[in-house]
Length: 438
Image 1 (cartoon, rainbow, N blue to C red):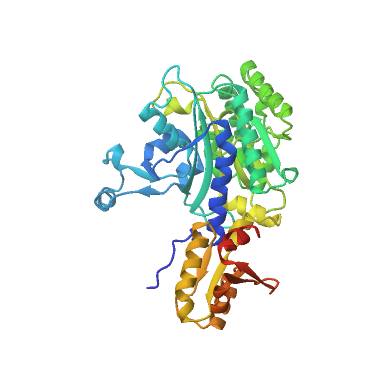
Image 2 (cartoon, rainbow, N blue to C red):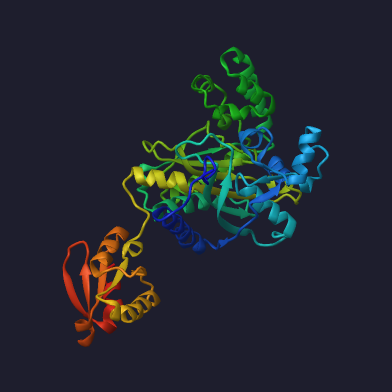
């Protein structure tokens, strides 16, 4: 059988890999000034980390999470018909999102002890969900995420949103073409009563709602706002709004977040039906869309003040966001923007006019690469004509021709493969000359 990648995955090759690298560089450029450091957590965690953190009612846990078993444990599950006899450490899952794993690390390693400064970290990692593969939705996808744990101040919410929008600007988005949606989901003091009002609304309209929404109504009725059934979404337009039920503290927190965004000049749209897809969110939630790009949300996040406690730690507030790489890339392409920088596109091919020039071409390649210039050469004994054909196929911008006459004069010939013009350049100045062409 011919080897093939798993359905819903893709190889990051060439410009896509360079774009992923560029996104990570943009994250460092935007997040480091705010005091964030990079972190990496395991791609595989105990199942309960996600079940407890994300919520049993979510589609992520109920339908999309990949379970992982060793060969021996898989045989036990098949024989027994369930994983009930497995120990918690044997019940594993691939990471469907980044926040729960970071919070698990915070609890396990006591990263935010009593009285300590908040923890500020970000990550760039693959995530895994068993979704039906489609445009912008893969079973292995990549996210840039940021977590700020230990800061209850509304300014932290606002600064997360500001960083998110600055990050999009750094990637090349025109912010005027993005829609930033914000809302408050309340907290344990005011959300229970709101949940009950939504649950009652759904049951009052049971004959108009899909079976999935009726199940959601029993577990977490707020999930009905995310239903993909168009008729359900129309019915939910008349449901009670969370902003009508916020307690005084939540209303004040939300007002302060908006005030900070206004001071920073961040444009936003209040969407009282925005609930996000994970159960751990409290108070501020936000999401970014690109109208017309056909990819849905390209990122979002919010506050999760109860998650550390759910994962076994002491009560500790948190806020963060995540950006989907594949969707962001599709949105940029729809806007006609490339994430590949001119430096990535420089590209040089060093061609030798004959076999006796091969060692001199080797020296030129060495000098250019040590100067940080992406350099290719012939390693298949091609003729000079064949070398130029290879350079064209590689899409490089310049060819450096190493010939006997040029070297005797202390020079090499540089051909611009776009304009087809040539110029003699001093051998010792070739790297500086090429770098000046970026």
